Image 1: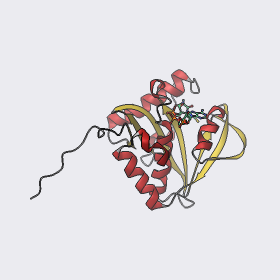
Image 2 (image 1 turned 90 degrees about the vertical axis):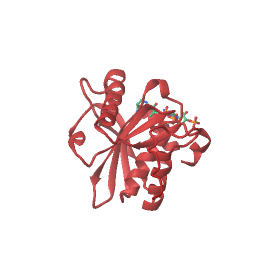
Image 3 (image 1 turned 135 degrees about the vertical axis):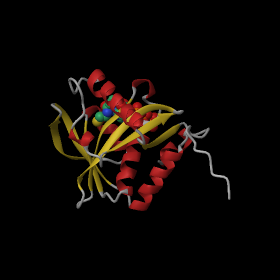
Image 4 (image 1 turned 180 degrees about the vertical axis):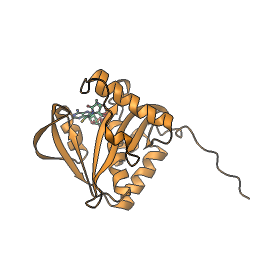
Length: 186
Ligand SMILES: CC(C)(COP(=O)(O)OP(=O)(O)OC[C@H]1O[C@@H](n2cnc3c(N)ncnc32)[C@H](O)[C@@H]1OP(=O)(O)O)[C@@H](O)C(=O)NCCC(=O)NCCS
C-alpha cells in the first residue's frame, strides 16, 4: 500500500498567505476573538460583543486568514436566501499588526469563492464608508444609498459570484497558500 501523505499543519514555504474555513472549536474561538478585538475593542461598533444569531447557526461559515502561519484575520459568511443564491459576508477583520500585508483582499476573495463553490450567485455586505474603495478594487459595486447598520452609516455593496467551478478552484488555491507574487491573480 502506498504511504499516506503527512498532514501539513503549516503553509508551504513561499506561500505566506493561507485562507480557509475554521475547522475546530479552537479555530472558531480565534475567529470570535479577532472580531471582538476589532469590532468591540478597536472600533467600538458593538459595546460588549459582536456575536449574533448567525453565530449559533451551524450553516454560518467562518474563514480564517494566516500570514506566514500566524492567524491574522477572519471573515464570516452566511446564506440570506438559498433559493435565490444570495449570501452575505460580514465581520471582515485583519488584526492591526497584519494590515496592508495583503491578507484582507484574499479573505474577501475566499468568502466570494466559498459562496460560489456552494452554489451561490450573489453576495452582499454592509461596508463601512472608509472601506468602500477597498471593496470596489475587488470588483464590488454600491447597491443603493447609504444605510444605518449596527447604528452606524454603511454602504450596501454587492458582487455577482463566479461559477461553482471557479469558486471551488479559488477556495482550493487559497487553502493551499499563495505568495505575494500571486496576489493579483486571486
Ligand atoms: C479593511 C481591511 C480588512 C483591509 O485589510 P488589509 O489586510 O489591510 O488589506 P490588504 O492588505 O489586502 O489591501 C489590499 C489592497 O487594498 C488597499 N486598501 C486597504 N484598505 C483600503 C481602503 N480602506 N481603501 C482603499 N484601499 C485600501 C491596500 O492598500 C492594498 O492595495 P495594494 O494591493 O495596491 O497594496 C483591514 O483594514 C481591517 O481589518 N480594518 C478594520 C476592520 C474593518 O474596517 N473591516 C471592514 C468592515 S466593512
